[in-house]
Length: 346
Ligand code: HPA
Ligand code: ZN
Image (tube, rainbow, N blue to C red; front, side, top):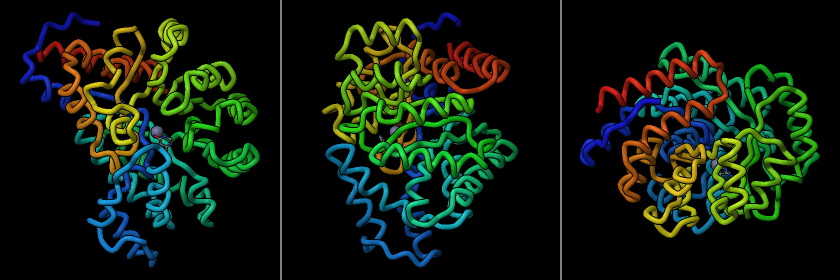
């Protein structure tokens, strides 16, 4: 840790863009831009219920999580071949590199694809090859986290895990996403216990729209290492104390929260409150093609709207590497790069 002197407000956006950072909450299917959806639809002969790229983009007016998920799963229907998954991931990894993302942990939803007859191997091999190429060609470290769809059954999650095990060296952890309310973490307690035995890292979406109780059960029953979103935690002071004491990272996604009406405006977002309460919050893009911006847009728009400053930026950059599933040597090297960036900006 270094002392951060105040930095003039007009220099903050450039610092936010340039600072080294990790992205820990990004659904790769949510990085599928409308142009790429149309290109893949044409390449694969898939009919889309939208006449044009513009018509599709105009449908991106969401009122809650479910209204988004319906369109998000429809968009993913153009992905059929290994190269499609590669191309989608590669497009995101180029954006990540441009945003000075040094490390990214990408969520993927295999059940969205296996339900359409696409094999697990097609999905994982395409995504994993892009991760390997990112390391050598872009200097971006990238790994994969398999998410179970919580609106489906425990049995289907177990089947998905079985299908994924031949690929266990190609992903580092498992998560839980899709429709939150009515599908509490405890529904997947046995699947997560098995994944824990297998040595996977564990994360879960909790407290995005759902209550603080879901954050508690994600921690205590699923035994997750990070909470995805978690912004509803401020409603429960005891939970806030637990998250601060145990330094449980929260992967917060401000533009997602805005677009899905979790907060009425960005200026009312509680990122600052989470940080000031001592929580290990991070900033992430969630589904950047749908929510109006990649990682740097999340940083610059949120800071502009909430008045957060350089000290918060420094903390968020550090938190992102502290919370990453990487070895101690890589973490140390990246934290040193964060310090060097802020020392030079002072
Ligand atoms: N929440 C839940 N499931 C998701 C999300 C999200 O923000 N994005 C993609 N799947
Ligand atoms: Zn998410």
